[in-house]
Image (cartoon, rainbow, N blue to C red):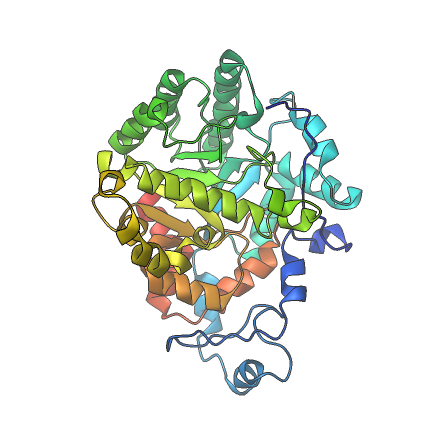
Length: 396
């Protein structure tokens, strides 16, 4: 795949950069949906117009209800956000050209990129203003997946991981980090993974979907999964700016390609390849993280299980798909500020497998934190989502 292919991206609504988020337009097109959760789950206060239109039964329920939690205690709740992007200017030579072709208004792009390239002034001010105690940093897309030459990927991975480790060492109470890996060379990736975790103190790996069209269930990547399992750290599977291929169903509708739908469909399918490909049977202690409420997979579990009986016996794995989603997969809230979705995800996979994330700087920290603080969960469960699960899983 050539790096010169045009990037297909969603065009967000035109609004001030500070308020711009990649997914706000979803709320604008989904008004009238209401926050009540089917199946008898508790209805929570909506976080956006997508969850309760004015005058709907859901919004009237919210208007009559009161939040009796102690606001002083809420202010003291520790918050760890686990999908927070950064970049190293010039580290990836293809990055500037890909950024230039990203189809969003220039003012929004400039704001995103100045925040990505900043590790202290803007970032810490945003964290302090919104009560975020710690960010788990990960390299933004485009990342190493756009590099064709394996040797170059190895060198860039070392450069970025060293940079990240130094930033964490300067402020260990505010930052932790996920490493990048040069998966173009799986053997070198294992070496770098070991170095990043053991020597640099990074907490896992984040990778952007595919390795130049290859997926992580393929045999050449099994040594990487073995090392992840041995080290006890997760791999966070994140969307890629440049897809592995073009889906005809998206033709003529660029809004479908990026965060509104295409990224979820592609990364969710990749995660299912890992499940159906037996990665977690071979490495039962390995862990996968998925953002955006698990790329919707928690809400598809019943369907996945009900159709599994039709899979030929020789292609089956040891358990139903839902087993792996409840035992090998963690999900984060990044970019999905919906109480209905959060309630459903917790109900599907369990509160101990859900972690808070913002997706800084592409999402609003203020909106994400307000969504978290107002979530209709018991204080102990809310604390798990806000910080406890991240501390336990990542060893913070």
